[in-house]
Length: 420
View: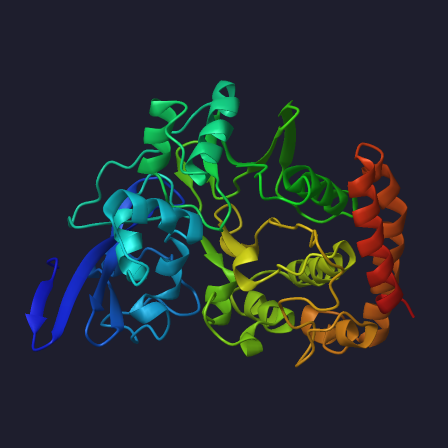
């Protein structure tokens, strides 16, 4: 395969090789090639014959890019960028950094953000480049003793101030691949990598501390939640650390967003495809066990109880477990109660056509989550609500009064809607 950059009429084709870090050996292999046709707003992907001939079993997207020869179906979303490649591209924060660094406009194609972001800090186990052979790919990031410097530099960048620490600034500008809209960077501590998210001046409440408390609450309920740590560095510098589940040491783990599994565009598409029940079915289709569907049901309920209505399809994911040889629901992440109001709906449908937080909406599609019938799901729901009420006071003991009141208000409102 050769890198294509050709012009035919008004259509310009641009290509990038796609690399995968093998889950078994951690070596990088060329998995295929992506081509964007700018004028047609379409793109195509083809698996490398060498990858297919080697009999390697990993489809980079088990729903939209199955392992097969030839040119696969054109991408229908993101201006022609395939879903799993959009997963590896930066979101609002990373795009903002790239706009500043390269003078890009707001109409820049996502492909260019993907291409320019660099491979050091991408989500998941994919990388891109112009060479047939994978390049050397390593992440250089601040270490735990630099936590304060990293947080202060993120704030300086957010506020468009000159660097507080030029070396940390260079590392952050070299790895603008992370998702989300809030400033964040990666910190290295032994074999673990952590996302670092500081409190912003514009926050109406201590968001890092609130997110940490909510994630602890989820853990107390028995959910599989990404590990978090909160640091109060000084009176005004509250910082959250979230352990990344997509890498351990030099090994990156294949990951795919729920948006990709559901074949929906986020942001940008109508919410009709945003569905917990459909996501449960996609998990079943890609080989995840029934306990993952039960876990997804519990997360749906917990988002309602915690008042987290930012539960959009990019805040759910699946991850490849090499020791099991299958995809699993990833640990939960980005569970943050709405700081300004008590939600009455979620971003994802609780059942067909129902976004509202209500008992019948939660139970209507229960069998799609692996429950035998609605009665079994109702008993499970009631037990979960009881555990949530029992564990919340333990979480609140370490919080200031404003966060205690916020969590209690969100829980009481949702409990009233969900109880029999």
